[in-house]
Length: 103
Image (tube, rainbow, N blue to C red):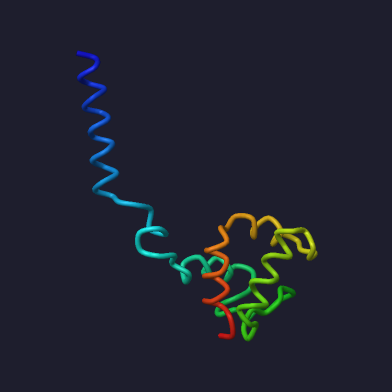
């Protein structure tokens, strides 16, 4: 009886995975706009920072990508970007840089 219950539970999990599919970043591509929306908190709407934070508006995708890499490697001073940059995959960072670059 217990084996049957475990078998049904395993079957249910398999069905749920098949119905839900892969995570959205794998199934439908990375939502760069959603990921980049996190940047608004410090860098302002559309990358137009009003404070001390660097403006992303007008910065090239290559510059944004390079900055992320430097933050990750500890080669660029920051208050928080060294930690934030480590929370994204390489593909996500490239997508964010392309999304924000030269806008």
